[in-house]
Image (cartoon, rainbow, N blue to C red):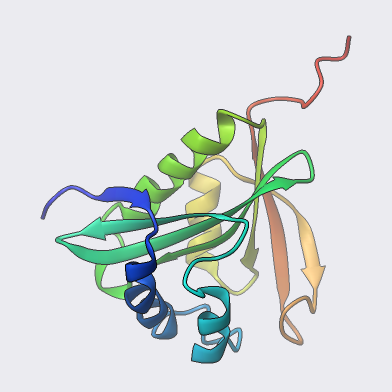
Length: 158
């Protein structure tokens, strides 16, 4: 297996990203459709930093970051292709995102579905703290759990 390459998303990555998301959970469970992905990736998410991971010359992951969220940035979307899970793609994507975010802000936020136990364990292992649930946020009967990783307070107290 070759090394994971993380780079800025390009418009020609769109179809591979939309296909990957269409066959992945938790997105199917949350009710996302091809129409949703077509709207979001038109051809790139607007006002966002978008990155793809390549593995063996195929799109293996996507990360979308919204700058200036609360007192930091917000990782809106992190997805890894089902064919490459547990191969370090998600970890490599997070490392890339954190390097970019923590160069400009002290906090990185994200959300994870309460039923997505593997994603919750993944983020916990990487040092993210669960802030709290948002009940019935995306689908009835399920919560999105807000997570935060920080390098320190946004103000130094002076």
